[in-house]
Image (tube, rainbow, N blue to C red; front, side):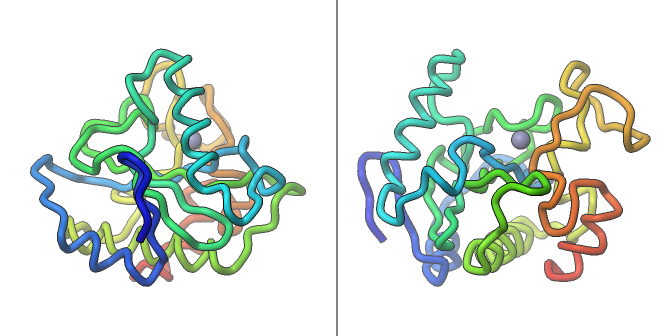
Length: 192
Ligand SMILES: [Zn+2]
């Protein structure tokens, strides 16, 4: 574990112990999964975890947020950065922030771009699973949310794939795809 200011960098193996020590009072109903798009894999140099989080924070402040938008960031090497206090509502998905934890995964996981490294893959599964357990949430498409499932303008959940104004986030190749169906096949079984 290493900290610079509020940013705390954890090894994947440290996460569950760290989480067990946290006092969290707000009600939690779901975990959001995103990809950063930029920075992508080409921006990750193996030792610049803090610099990347600091520059994301600067970019988010420019957009008017008071600090970095996400609670957690997961890197290609599987390390996890605590960014925004878990007890603070993130700025991840319009319409789904109040009861959510926001995880940003470094990379561009749209088809044909960054191919997810296994350490990051394992860490995303481990962290999501640990959070669901901590907040006593049953793994499913109501407790794990992809940004793509929400209309960017209305903040409402999209009822039919392919409609509404959506982002591809967390990527059209994220654990096999960004649709609810792809989630059920590609990620959900690993969260159970
Ligand atoms: Zn997103």
